[in-house]
Length: 197
Ligand SMILES: [Cu+2]
Image (tube, rainbow, N blue to C red; front, side, top):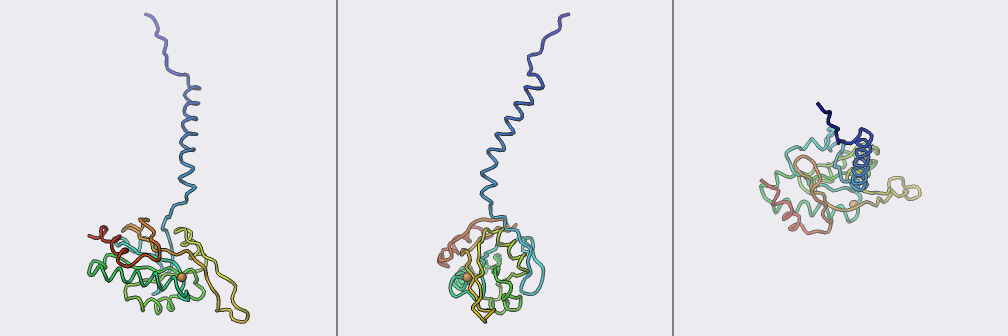
């Protein structure tokens, strides 16, 4: 009986083919990770002092924006737009949690946030935390902010520049869309409507 010679590649050839494939996969993977997607993960304290994460609102859609309560224009506009959109949705708005995350935790304490957000409606949730917690949350949403030095002799008088925009997060807290902060309430409502049950 004759022994058949196998034509299969040697282990060395297999290994190099495997390495080439691995290199190709890594090459394909690099641009995706370099984009640093919005993970939407956070660990903060809500305006009632409860520690919360992206999982605390499971089952609900979220409209989120970042800013600070002393903001003269962008934040009141964004929050007003969010409130308007929820009003347009009527009862279905109960499926959406409107969330404001401060990037100025020094001034935006839980109590201060609660007081400020009350003007936009009872369902608004304010989130704050330590500077580190807030910074981690901002990074997870790719929000940039700069706290400018206070005016001389007025340590509580300072401006914070920050990225604007309204995030729609799904019922698991995953990123769905970022809307421009100047978008009208009716348009924001239209973006939410297909997501409602
Ligand atoms: Cu603002």
